[in-house]
Image (cartoon, rainbow, N blue to C red; front, side, top):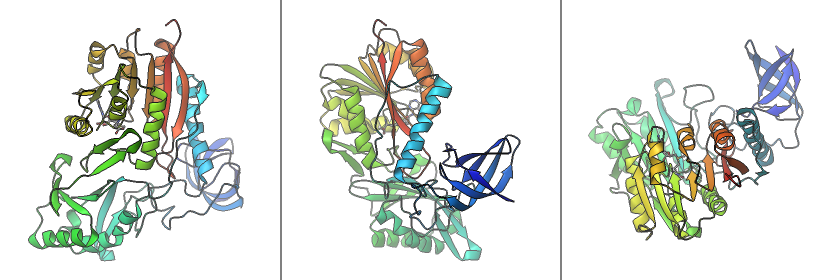
Length: 436
Ligand SMILES: C[S@@+](CC[C@H](N)C(=O)[O-])C[C@H]1O[C@@H](n2cnc3c(N)ncnc32)[C@H](O)[C@@H]1O
């Protein structure tokens, strides 16, 4: 069945939103302001799912997807929309969440932090599937709404030198004895080298080992093997990995990392994000600042460079070990201290005993930082810069800060860390209200 729809907005998954027969319809492939002919995909009690068959009146912001696999591959959702539309949709998502969940408005909306839209993914998990009837292996992202691996020979959001390896990887894995027992490849791209971590479920045969070694030599990538959980990942060929790192030149900081460590996915936008966060935090020599969920020290070390004293707190002991070594590498060990703590548990209270802090930087995982914000005392901090990868938990935590902790939401804005996806990264600033 097909019907015509007028698209009113985009939803959090990048689908057009329309009304049909008194119900909301979510329409794949349609943009705000467009009139489309759509086909019903699924009928639910409170909404319908539909797919665009034909664009009858196109948005001026519509453009041709650059990638041949767009629509099948689940990696991107918005390549048919220009950057302006993508960023505006993310901004609306941020404002809607503040309003709906937090009953809040930001004092000021910041301009979006944005950078290169293609070749930006410096960290990715590629799925691998050996398909006997195709006579080869597939290497790529999952298909949309499916567990199948997309049949793709390139990827526009991976750095070109990694994208170019996909056909070579498919061919090489197809010849391995372990080809059906190699579920994923972790990609970690640094400023100098690229590492591919092959997860394998069985002990590798001599011939498989020889093929993987040949692949490393031909491709120029550094191959690691991972026989078990992430902690079992080890360099394989050409051996010990020299310097997987990225630089933050504005702060004269180099961050070294292991291929399975958390790093911000988009290194170009990360450099701008760190700059924006530092401008908003405005660290001063002599201040005491805490960087919560600090990872490898991505924000901690630029804060320390300002002359402030900073405590980085993080749940992963491995990341804290590397953060300490990064502080030493950058000559900042006197300014930056680190502690391992689970900030989702009662340890959030322990943070209070480490205070007072003049300012906080908080960059939690999707779950947010509600335990931390609830534990904050009345006296400090003066300012919080909150970097978020989930607008709903940011809005929830913002409500605690504003409605119960005496802060105002001074400013907020989106960070286009993942162009062409509907994923919204954002940054928000909270200041203690005068007299509180
Ligand atoms: C979004 S990352 C930010 C890392 C770092 N700020 C950066 O920019 O690279 C979130 C961090 O929170 C850490 N984390 C996750 N759960 C945690 C917890 N319960 N307590 C403390 N840290 C946690 C993760 O290990 C990860 O390093």
